[in-house]
Length: 286
Image 1 (cartoon, helix red, strand yellow):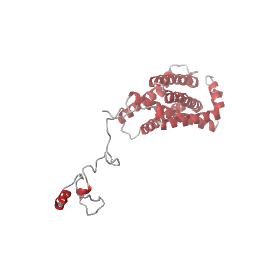
Image 2 (image 1 turned 45 degrees about the vertical axis):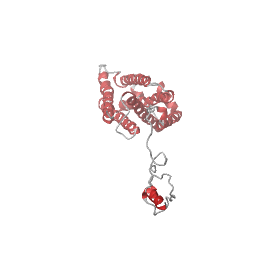
Image 3 (image 1 turned 90 degrees about the horizontal axis):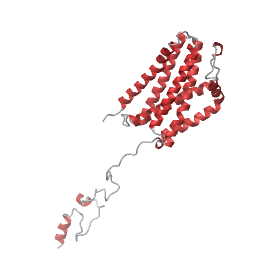
Image 4 (image 1 turned 180 degrees about the vertical axis):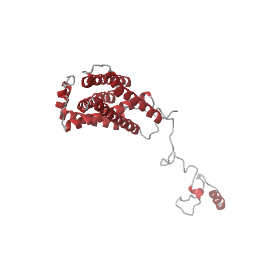
């Protein structure tokens, strides 16, 4: 009878209840088939083992700005910096706005501004580049696609921002070269300061719509309409200041159309095409 129990014990690999006396799993002389039972690696009995995902994956949560902590932090940071910058230079800004539609003579072309006011305007231009890159990124996510070959969406925003800075820099050099050759350095300096002021105000204008979209869920269609209206208004103001600075005493008034198209519209359309090309190159097409 003892021999029969020992034989039953030797063939028991499932750890089923048998009359034989059990063995401890800590025994170093215990055979391997005693240590590993049928359910020894089952994830239902061992929660520490990775068992994979059970069930069916649901629909992903749609992207929203107020769920993105990084972009929200950037917007809040720029909002605070804008308020502080305006508090320090509000007199200069108000003076520039009051004199914006004033038609100066040649003796009053000089725009007096301090180093702090110049740095604030440059910061506003940088703010415009960041906000425009965010606006174009939201446009791409909604109307083009949200899958790219980049590891993170923030790399795409950074690429757009670098392109925006390059666009403003190239336009600055184009204006400097053309205006110095055809109109002289004094008028060119006056125009560059005026253009800097217009570009810096663009950052202030675009910031509210991004904040409204982030916290009040304004639709992308309304944001596009707002951007188009602001862009047209800015181009009209730029056209007016071009006329006042360079062409109000010119006999051939149609030259301003050639000037404006060559230095404003053509670079803008080329830049839009470059943005589309970069987006199509980085987008994953299924």
